[in-house]
Image (cartoon, rainbow, N blue to C red):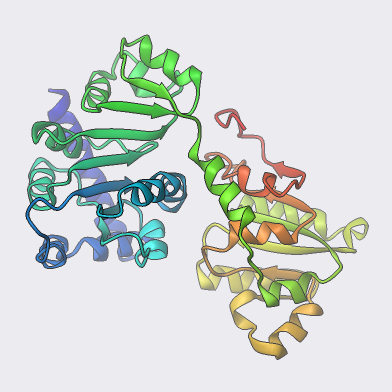
Length: 358
Protein backbone atom coordinates (compact mmCIF):
# COMPACT_ATOMS: atom_id res chain seq x y z
CA UNK A 1 0.00 0.00 0.00
CA UNK A 2 2.71 2.61 0.82
CA UNK A 3 4.38 1.93 -2.56
CA UNK A 4 1.09 2.43 -4.39
CA UNK A 5 0.47 5.69 -2.51
CA UNK A 6 4.01 6.86 -3.29
CA UNK A 7 3.53 6.01 -6.99
CA UNK A 8 0.27 7.95 -7.05
CA UNK A 9 1.71 11.01 -5.31
CA UNK A 10 4.79 11.15 -7.52
CA UNK A 11 2.65 10.84 -10.66
CA UNK A 12 0.48 13.70 -9.40
CA UNK A 13 3.64 15.72 -8.75
CA UNK A 14 4.96 15.13 -12.27
CA UNK A 15 1.52 15.91 -13.69
CA UNK A 16 1.52 19.21 -11.82
CA UNK A 17 4.87 20.09 -13.40
CA UNK A 18 3.39 19.28 -16.80
CA UNK A 19 0.37 21.51 -16.15
CA UNK A 20 2.59 24.34 -14.94
CA UNK A 21 4.93 24.18 -17.95
CA UNK A 22 3.01 26.70 -20.13
CA UNK A 23 3.31 29.28 -17.34
CA UNK A 24 6.67 28.45 -15.72
CA UNK A 25 10.00 28.50 -17.56
CA UNK A 26 11.49 26.19 -14.94
CA UNK A 27 8.72 23.61 -15.34
CA UNK A 28 8.98 23.91 -19.12
CA UNK A 29 12.71 23.19 -19.04
CA UNK A 30 12.04 20.21 -16.73
CA UNK A 31 9.62 18.77 -19.29
CA UNK A 32 11.70 19.58 -22.39
CA UNK A 33 14.86 18.12 -20.87
CA UNK A 34 13.20 14.73 -20.40
CA UNK A 35 11.61 14.57 -23.84
CA UNK A 36 13.19 11.69 -25.78
CA UNK A 37 15.56 11.08 -22.87
CA UNK A 38 15.99 7.33 -23.41
CA UNK A 39 16.66 7.73 -27.15
CA UNK A 40 19.36 10.31 -26.43
CA UNK A 41 20.80 8.11 -23.69
CA UNK A 42 20.98 5.08 -25.99
CA UNK A 43 22.85 7.17 -28.57
CA UNK A 44 25.25 8.55 -25.95
CA UNK A 45 26.04 5.07 -24.60
CA UNK A 46 26.16 3.26 -27.94
CA UNK A 47 29.98 3.23 -28.03
CA UNK A 48 30.52 1.82 -24.52
CA UNK A 49 32.69 -1.28 -24.31
CA UNK A 50 31.84 -4.51 -22.46
CA UNK A 51 33.34 -4.51 -18.99
CA UNK A 52 33.93 -0.75 -19.04
CA UNK A 53 33.53 0.58 -15.46
CA UNK A 54 30.94 3.35 -15.13
CA UNK A 55 30.06 5.35 -12.02
CA UNK A 56 26.70 7.10 -11.85
CA UNK A 57 26.41 10.24 -9.72
CA UNK A 58 22.98 11.78 -9.24
CA UNK A 59 22.41 15.30 -7.86
CA UNK A 60 19.22 17.26 -7.33
CA UNK A 61 20.63 20.56 -8.55
CA UNK A 62 23.74 22.73 -8.82
CA UNK A 63 24.37 23.00 -5.08
CA UNK A 64 24.33 19.25 -4.61
CA UNK A 65 26.62 18.82 -7.60
CA UNK A 66 29.17 21.16 -6.04
CA UNK A 67 28.89 19.07 -2.89
CA UNK A 68 29.49 15.81 -4.75
CA UNK A 69 32.09 17.21 -7.12
CA UNK A 70 35.16 16.75 -4.83
CA UNK A 71 34.26 13.08 -4.37
CA UNK A 72 33.81 12.55 -8.10
CA UNK A 73 37.08 14.27 -8.95
CA UNK A 74 38.99 12.24 -6.37
CA UNK A 75 37.49 9.05 -7.82
CA UNK A 76 38.61 10.05 -11.31
CA UNK A 77 42.09 10.94 -10.06
CA UNK A 78 42.43 7.53 -8.39
CA UNK A 79 40.75 5.60 -11.23
CA UNK A 80 41.25 7.47 -14.53
CA UNK A 81 39.65 4.61 -16.48
CA UNK A 82 36.27 5.23 -14.82
CA UNK A 83 33.54 6.55 -17.12
CA UNK A 84 31.09 8.97 -15.52
CA UNK A 85 27.33 9.27 -15.91
CA UNK A 86 26.00 12.45 -14.27
CA UNK A 87 22.28 13.09 -13.79
CA UNK A 88 20.27 16.00 -12.41
CA UNK A 89 16.69 16.36 -11.25
CA UNK A 90 16.52 20.14 -11.63
CA UNK A 91 17.06 22.29 -14.74
CA UNK A 92 19.21 24.73 -12.73
CA UNK A 93 21.76 21.96 -12.18
CA UNK A 94 21.62 20.44 -15.64
CA UNK A 95 21.78 23.73 -17.55
CA UNK A 96 24.85 24.92 -15.65
CA UNK A 97 26.81 21.67 -15.72
CA UNK A 98 25.72 19.97 -18.96
CA UNK A 99 29.26 20.49 -20.31
CA UNK A 100 31.15 19.35 -17.20
CA UNK A 101 34.35 17.92 -18.73
CA UNK A 102 34.89 14.93 -16.41
CA UNK A 103 31.50 13.40 -17.24
CA UNK A 104 31.10 11.16 -20.28
CA UNK A 105 27.31 11.42 -20.30
CA UNK A 106 25.10 14.09 -18.65
CA UNK A 107 21.31 13.97 -18.61
CA UNK A 108 18.19 14.44 -16.52
CA UNK A 109 16.96 11.77 -14.13
CA UNK A 110 13.85 10.15 -15.61
CA UNK A 111 10.62 10.62 -13.68
CA UNK A 112 10.54 8.10 -10.84
CA UNK A 113 8.27 5.30 -12.05
CA UNK A 114 8.93 1.58 -11.82
CA UNK A 115 9.18 1.25 -15.62
CA UNK A 116 11.48 4.26 -16.05
CA UNK A 117 13.79 3.17 -13.25
CA UNK A 118 14.12 -0.43 -14.49
CA UNK A 119 14.78 0.76 -18.05
CA UNK A 120 17.33 3.35 -16.93
CA UNK A 121 19.36 0.88 -14.85
CA UNK A 122 19.21 -1.81 -17.56
CA UNK A 123 20.47 0.70 -20.13
CA UNK A 124 23.23 2.35 -18.09
CA UNK A 125 24.45 -0.66 -16.03
CA UNK A 126 26.71 1.35 -13.68
CA UNK A 127 29.35 -0.35 -11.56
CA UNK A 128 28.60 2.06 -8.71
CA UNK A 129 25.83 4.59 -8.02
CA UNK A 130 26.35 7.68 -5.86
CA UNK A 131 23.40 9.79 -4.74
CA UNK A 132 24.10 13.18 -3.18
CA UNK A 133 22.51 14.47 0.03
CA UNK A 134 18.69 14.51 -0.23
CA UNK A 135 17.81 12.51 -3.33
CA UNK A 136 15.56 9.59 -2.34
CA UNK A 137 13.56 8.27 -5.31
CA UNK A 138 12.07 4.91 -4.36
CA UNK A 139 11.85 3.19 -7.75
CA UNK A 140 15.32 4.27 -8.88
CA UNK A 141 16.84 3.08 -5.60
CA UNK A 142 14.91 -0.18 -5.74
CA UNK A 143 16.00 -0.84 -9.34
CA UNK A 144 19.65 -0.42 -8.38
CA UNK A 145 19.21 -2.72 -5.38
CA UNK A 146 17.49 -5.41 -7.45
CA UNK A 147 20.25 -5.24 -10.06
CA UNK A 148 22.90 -5.77 -7.36
CA UNK A 149 24.59 -2.43 -8.09
CA UNK A 150 26.41 -0.92 -5.07
CA UNK A 151 24.71 2.30 -4.00
CA UNK A 152 26.08 4.92 -1.62
CA UNK A 153 24.81 8.23 -0.29
CA UNK A 154 27.31 11.06 0.22
CA UNK A 155 26.94 14.34 2.14
CA UNK A 156 23.81 13.04 3.85
CA UNK A 157 22.25 15.14 6.60
CA UNK A 158 19.45 13.71 8.71
CA UNK A 159 17.15 15.52 11.16
CA UNK A 160 14.53 14.26 13.59
CA UNK A 161 11.63 15.92 11.72
CA UNK A 162 12.27 14.01 8.47
CA UNK A 163 9.88 11.21 7.40
CA UNK A 164 12.52 8.52 8.08
CA UNK A 165 11.94 9.01 11.82
CA UNK A 166 8.16 9.41 11.78
CA UNK A 167 5.39 6.85 12.30
CA UNK A 168 4.37 7.19 8.65
CA UNK A 169 7.91 6.88 7.27
CA UNK A 170 8.06 3.13 6.62
CA UNK A 171 8.64 3.56 2.88
CA UNK A 172 11.36 6.13 3.48
CA UNK A 173 13.07 3.83 5.98
CA UNK A 174 12.99 1.03 3.41
CA UNK A 175 14.85 3.30 0.95
CA UNK A 176 17.74 3.62 3.40
CA UNK A 177 18.10 -0.15 3.33
CA UNK A 178 18.94 -0.02 -0.39
CA UNK A 179 22.21 1.81 0.35
CA UNK A 180 25.41 -0.08 1.00
CA UNK A 181 26.80 2.90 2.95
CA UNK A 182 25.35 6.23 4.06
CA UNK A 183 28.18 8.77 4.28
CA UNK A 184 26.78 11.60 6.42
CA UNK A 185 28.00 15.01 7.53
CA UNK A 186 27.89 14.72 11.32
CA UNK A 187 27.62 12.45 14.35
CA UNK A 188 24.03 13.57 14.98
CA UNK A 189 22.99 11.99 11.67
CA UNK A 190 24.82 8.78 12.56
CA UNK A 191 23.04 8.60 15.92
CA UNK A 192 19.62 9.17 14.32
CA UNK A 193 20.21 6.39 11.79
CA UNK A 194 21.40 4.02 14.53
CA UNK A 195 18.07 4.59 16.29
CA UNK A 196 16.13 3.02 13.37
CA UNK A 197 18.34 0.84 13.74
CA UNK A 198 20.80 1.08 10.86
CA UNK A 199 24.49 0.25 11.05
CA UNK A 200 25.58 1.41 7.57
CA UNK A 201 26.12 5.11 8.39
CA UNK A 202 29.57 6.75 8.55
CA UNK A 203 30.49 10.33 9.48
CA UNK A 204 32.58 11.51 6.53
CA UNK A 205 32.14 15.26 7.07
CA UNK A 206 30.78 17.78 4.59
CA UNK A 207 32.43 17.76 1.13
CA UNK A 208 31.30 21.36 0.67
CA UNK A 209 34.26 22.26 2.89
CA UNK A 210 36.63 20.56 0.43
CA UNK A 211 34.96 22.34 -2.47
CA UNK A 212 35.02 25.88 -1.05
CA UNK A 213 38.67 25.50 0.01
CA UNK A 214 39.51 24.37 -3.52
CA UNK A 215 37.65 27.30 -5.09
CA UNK A 216 39.22 29.86 -2.75
CA UNK A 217 42.72 28.62 -3.61
CA UNK A 218 42.20 29.09 -7.36
CA UNK A 219 43.61 32.11 -9.16
CA UNK A 220 40.44 33.72 -10.52
CA UNK A 221 39.91 37.28 -11.68
CA UNK A 222 36.98 38.99 -13.34
CA UNK A 223 37.95 42.36 -14.91
CA UNK A 224 34.45 43.85 -14.91
CA UNK A 225 33.92 43.00 -11.24
CA UNK A 226 37.36 44.34 -10.41
CA UNK A 227 36.50 47.63 -12.15
CA UNK A 228 33.17 47.85 -10.35
CA UNK A 229 34.65 47.17 -6.92
CA UNK A 230 37.98 49.00 -7.27
CA UNK A 231 38.82 50.36 -3.80
CA UNK A 232 35.21 50.66 -2.59
CA UNK A 233 33.65 48.77 0.30
CA UNK A 234 31.55 45.99 -1.23
CA UNK A 235 28.77 43.79 0.09
CA UNK A 236 28.22 40.63 -1.98
CA UNK A 237 24.64 39.39 -1.70
CA UNK A 238 24.44 35.82 -2.94
CA UNK A 239 21.51 33.52 -3.80
CA UNK A 240 18.94 36.17 -2.88
CA UNK A 241 15.18 35.92 -3.20
CA UNK A 242 12.70 38.83 -3.41
CA UNK A 243 12.24 38.94 0.38
CA UNK A 244 16.01 39.29 0.81
CA UNK A 245 16.27 41.90 -1.92
CA UNK A 246 13.45 44.07 -0.53
CA UNK A 247 15.17 44.20 2.86
CA UNK A 248 18.68 44.70 1.50
CA UNK A 249 17.82 47.48 -0.92
CA UNK A 250 15.74 49.30 1.69
CA UNK A 251 18.58 49.26 4.22
CA UNK A 252 21.37 49.94 1.73
CA UNK A 253 19.49 52.95 0.37
CA UNK A 254 19.92 54.73 3.71
CA UNK A 255 22.59 57.50 3.87
CA UNK A 256 24.76 55.54 6.31
CA UNK A 257 25.53 53.02 3.53
CA UNK A 258 26.24 55.48 0.70
CA UNK A 259 29.90 54.44 0.61
CA UNK A 260 29.07 50.77 0.04
CA UNK A 261 28.73 49.16 -3.37
CA UNK A 262 26.44 46.17 -3.86
CA UNK A 263 26.98 43.01 -5.90
CA UNK A 264 23.63 41.25 -6.06
CA UNK A 265 23.48 37.63 -7.27
CA UNK A 266 19.81 36.52 -7.26
CA UNK A 267 18.91 32.85 -7.08
CA UNK A 268 16.29 33.29 -9.80
CA UNK A 269 17.89 34.73 -12.94
CA UNK A 270 14.67 35.46 -14.85
CA UNK A 271 15.79 38.30 -17.18
CA UNK A 272 12.57 40.31 -16.97
CA UNK A 273 12.58 40.30 -13.17
CA UNK A 274 16.25 41.22 -12.93
CA UNK A 275 15.91 44.08 -15.41
CA UNK A 276 13.01 45.49 -13.39
CA UNK A 277 15.05 45.07 -10.22
CA UNK A 278 17.99 47.04 -11.61
CA UNK A 279 15.65 49.78 -12.85
CA UNK A 280 13.80 50.10 -9.54
CA UNK A 281 16.66 51.34 -7.33
CA UNK A 282 17.35 55.06 -6.71
CA UNK A 283 21.05 54.82 -7.59
CA UNK A 284 23.15 53.81 -10.64
CA UNK A 285 22.71 50.11 -11.42
CA UNK A 286 23.12 47.68 -14.31
CA UNK A 287 22.99 44.01 -15.21
CA UNK A 288 26.33 42.23 -15.44
CA UNK A 289 25.61 40.87 -18.93
CA UNK A 290 24.72 44.32 -20.24
CA UNK A 291 28.35 45.42 -19.84
CA UNK A 292 31.32 44.20 -21.84
CA UNK A 293 34.83 45.16 -22.87
CA UNK A 294 36.70 48.28 -21.79
CA UNK A 295 33.60 50.46 -22.18
CA UNK A 296 31.70 48.12 -19.88
CA UNK A 297 34.45 48.31 -17.28
CA UNK A 298 34.39 52.12 -17.39
CA UNK A 299 30.60 52.10 -16.97
CA UNK A 300 30.82 49.58 -14.12
CA UNK A 301 33.16 51.87 -12.19
CA UNK A 302 30.39 54.48 -11.94
CA UNK A 303 27.71 52.10 -10.69
CA UNK A 304 26.62 51.42 -7.14
CA UNK A 305 24.65 48.21 -7.80
CA UNK A 306 25.72 45.38 -10.11
CA UNK A 307 23.11 42.67 -10.62
CA UNK A 308 24.81 39.43 -11.72
CA UNK A 309 22.40 37.83 -14.19
CA UNK A 310 24.44 34.71 -14.83
CA UNK A 311 24.97 31.50 -12.86
CA UNK A 312 28.22 29.83 -11.81
CA UNK A 313 30.38 32.69 -10.52
CA UNK A 314 29.06 33.26 -7.01
CA UNK A 315 31.45 31.03 -5.07
CA UNK A 316 34.40 32.86 -6.64
CA UNK A 317 33.19 36.44 -6.66
CA UNK A 318 32.79 36.56 -2.87
CA UNK A 319 36.54 37.28 -2.88
CA UNK A 320 35.75 40.82 -4.05
CA UNK A 321 33.70 41.65 -0.96
CA UNK A 322 34.29 42.92 2.55
CA UNK A 323 30.89 41.74 3.76
CA UNK A 324 28.52 39.00 2.58
CA UNK A 325 24.80 38.38 2.75
CA UNK A 326 23.50 34.89 1.93
CA UNK A 327 19.86 34.64 0.84
CA UNK A 328 17.09 32.16 1.47
CA UNK A 329 16.72 32.75 5.20
CA UNK A 330 13.27 34.27 4.78
CA UNK A 331 12.05 31.26 2.78
CA UNK A 332 12.81 27.55 2.89
CA UNK A 333 16.30 28.08 4.32
CA UNK A 334 19.62 29.77 3.72
CA UNK A 335 21.97 28.83 0.94
CA UNK A 336 25.68 28.01 1.21
CA UNK A 337 27.30 29.96 4.06
CA UNK A 338 30.67 28.28 3.59
CA UNK A 339 31.23 29.96 0.20
CA UNK A 340 31.74 33.47 1.68
CA UNK A 341 33.08 32.26 5.03
CA UNK A 342 36.09 30.63 3.38
CA UNK A 343 37.29 34.13 2.39
CA UNK A 344 37.05 35.35 5.98
CA UNK A 345 34.05 37.63 5.36
CA UNK A 346 31.50 38.47 8.03
CA UNK A 347 28.31 36.74 6.88
CA UNK A 348 24.71 37.94 7.32
CA UNK A 349 21.62 35.81 6.71
CA UNK A 350 17.90 35.54 7.52
CA UNK A 351 16.14 33.85 10.43
CA UNK A 352 15.46 30.37 9.00
CA UNK A 353 18.84 28.81 9.70
CA UNK A 354 18.05 26.15 12.31
CA UNK A 355 18.77 23.21 9.99
CA UNK A 356 22.19 24.54 8.98
CA UNK A 357 24.90 23.48 11.39
CA UNK A 358 27.46 25.95 10.04
